[in-house]
Amino acid sequence: MERITRADDRVHRPAGPWTPTVHRLLAHLHEQGFVAAPEPIELGHTLETVSFVPGEAGEYPWTADVASEAALVTTARLLRHYHDAAATFPRDDDRDLWSQAERYPAETIVHGDFAPYNCVYDGIAAVGLIDFDTAHPGPRVWDVASAVYRFAPFTTGEVEGSTAPSLDERLDRAAEFCRAYDLDARSRQVLAETIIASLVALVTTMETEAAAGNPKFVSDLHHGHADLYRADVAYIERHAADISAAVA
Image (cartoon, rainbow, N blue to C red):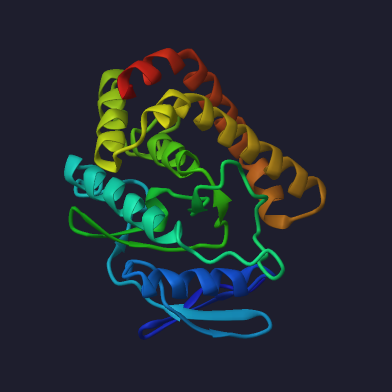
């Protein structure tokens, strides 16, 4: 399996059938002034080359900077700016190919895996967004749901650090993210159910790919990732009414 490597200001990544479409998206983002995304440089048969986005990815466990309210707010604004730029992407259904199925309403090109580890920070400021392999047409709330799940966070594991926040703290962070993004009222109403739907879809994908022999997903199942996501679904279902009330 190809690995992601960096050479100076360039990153070499495995390419898939969808990579030409992603490169068109990245070029469009830069044309629109959204320079927080990698810039496409070269596309080969098995590898792509994009520009390196300087900064620190929000890997777990979080630093104090990434866990801060300021980082939460700048991350929400980064996502909003990305969605606004991607919404004008000139789609071409005859040649566009995405790694994920289109979701409706297709309001923009969603990132598809908007999480701390795909955001880049300069201290408390979110300055970059990387790894667009899962980008596809979809509703803005799909990415916002992923972001709220990861950044509130509504996870039952300890990936966010050694001290898990209280439910009230999670709800406050969810509401703050939606305010900073300026999420519309209808999307706020369906946010909790969208988080659940995205996790169920993720587990289904993991199990389907593992059954087909995909080594990454076989490993994920072996390490209990699907069970963790199921536990998160149960947790969010228990608190769905609280989440909806907090972000309304």
